[in-house]
Amino acid sequence: MKKNKNNCTKPISQNLILTLLALYFIPISNSPLKKPPPLPILPLPSSPQLEWQLSSMALFLHFGPNTFTDSEWGTGRADPRVFNPTRLNASQWVHAAKSAGFNRVILTAKHHDGFCLWPSEYTDYSVKSSEWKNGTGDVVAELALAAKEAGVDLGLYLSPWDRHEPSYGKTLEYNEFYMAQMAELLTRYGEIKEVWLDGAKGEGEKDMEYFFDSWFSLIHQLQPRAVIFSDVGPDTRWIGDEAGVADSTCWSLFNRSDAKIGGTDPRYSQGGDPHGHDWVPAECDVSIRPGWFWHASEAPKSAVELLDLYYKSVGRNCLLLLNVPPNSLGLISAEDIQVLQEFSELRKSIFSYNLAENALVSASSTRGGISNSQFDPHNVMKEDIYTYWAPEENHSDWTLLINLQEPVSFNVLQVQEPIHMGQRISRFHLDILNEERKWKKVINGTTVGYQRLLQFPTVKSQQLRFVIDKSRAEPLISHLGIYMDKFSTVSSMSDSTSQTSLNGSHILQKSMSNHSEIAAI
Image (cartoon, rainbow, N blue to C red):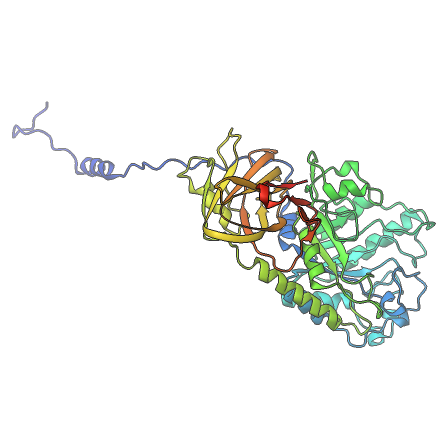
């Protein structure tokens, strides 16, 4: 060792000492690294499709000359001066929708008769030829303003079939005409969240080839946040009927290449396709009245009937599109508003409180181990599709155990998947622990998707077991709830059996004297 003149060792530098001290006191983390989320399973929804699905319900507004001529399919020859809604109030329409829980309104800007509810520059068959506001009015503009002020999304229906336009039947000319009108609607009225069109056309009408791909490209170009509805998408599909009823098995997966607008098998539309390559969720359209347009002689469905439709649409992984037509004054009729409010109160009464909210939840396994809160089974008690329970990989037992901490009576099960990770579950069932401390099956289900609601005869238990029997990949559950519905009815088949078909799941309950299970068929 080299010594200085005073025979002393060379001192260690102050910077080195500080560095050593800093290294000594740096804490070493003992916490494990986070387990990444599982891989999504294709296909996946786009951002606009996710926003559409989360809205759950939309209000359809069929309005036009048919409202004044007591018609459903106008001929295109009605005098435009018949259109004169002297008390039109678009804010009333939007308020009726929003107060009843509908976050989107869709207007028939042009129905099959070709009459335009905006002053189109490509035809005189529009509001500018009517007596309403001396031809200066614009229904689309008034609705767009009212929706924007209320924070409600706006959608527009532009009928491909046009019984007034002379160019209809001339392929090139009419497609140019249609796209020009579409451009007007998508550039004049702010953000449009849904564009609705269909393949409806009467028998014996002119042959017409629609350039759907060009239409869709234009819509996505001018309104990139809009979803496009048609028989086969591209963003959301028709359920295949006008009764508002989806199949009890309903996939958002679909093969667009196997379907054709105006020529798709309704059974394929109703159920979707577990092997589909496209994400095209279903929309269930139905009218609150027998007709789509307002008729003085017709009355609305009851709130209980709407609740039944809610279970059969929203409760089956679909969006409910409920038509509530304005009357000839330009207002939603008082009796329709009353039914909408009663329908809203029914839903609040049933679904405002999850009877399992304070339950203790455990699982057969948890991704990353039981200490991994990111995929903890208690996530299913949160109302958020972006948090979820995930089981460990390569496990075949997918079970959630729910301890309600006290016996609870219920007759509705709600299940949700985090659909941004893909739709996975194809079969599940719910058990309860009975008084003999044996597990008894309550109900079977098939697909889940964004939301599944299942009804069954009222049961009472403290311990529940939710079992996923089959899935396209490791199943993920974002929410699970149980509720009591005191309004829907279960019809009796005989002394020994009872049956409910309120949501398409036929449930047979054998006599309790032999302690048999409740089996779904």
